Length: 210
Image (cartoon, rainbow, N blue to C red; front, side):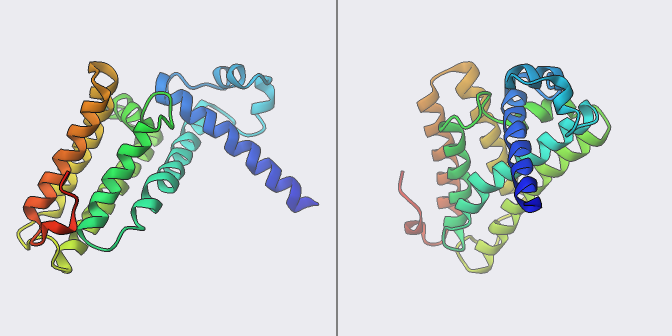
C-alpha cells in the first residue's frame, strides 16, 4: 500500500513537471512559478509547496524532467539505429521529429532556457549547461564510434561535427517558429546534416540520398 501511494505520488509529480516544462518552453524558466503552475493546473498554490520549497527548486526539477523527456523521446530511439554514421544521423532526425511533432508548445525547453541563463551564474545555469554538455558529448561519442568503425573518415573532428549538428538543431527551432516556412526549415536542417555526413562517409550508401 505504501509503494502504491509512493508510485501515485511520483506520477502526480511527473505530471506537474511535464506541465512546468511545457510552460517554460514558452515563457522561460523565469516565467515559471508555483503560482503560475497552480493556475495552469487548476490547483491551490499551497498544494504545490509539498513538492517544492521555492521557485529555484521548481526550476531545477523542471530541467531534470526536460532531460528525461529528451532522453526518452530523442536519445533512446536514436540509439536504436545501427552503430556508426547511421546512429549519428538518427539522433539528429529524432531531434527534428521531437520538434515537428510539437511535443512542447514552445518548441524546445533548452533553447528557451539557455538564452535566459547563459549569463546568469547559479544552480539553474549549471543544470542547463550540464544538460547541453551531455547532448554534445553524446554526439561526439557516436561520431567517434563512427570513425572507429570506418564509417566516417579519420580526419573527422568529433567536437567540430557535434557543434555543427547541435547548431543546426537549435537554429531550426527559431527559424521554423519565428521566420516561418516550417516545412522548408525542417527540410534544410535534415539535408544540411545529411550532406555533411555523406561528404565524410567512405560509403555514402549507408545514408539516405535525401
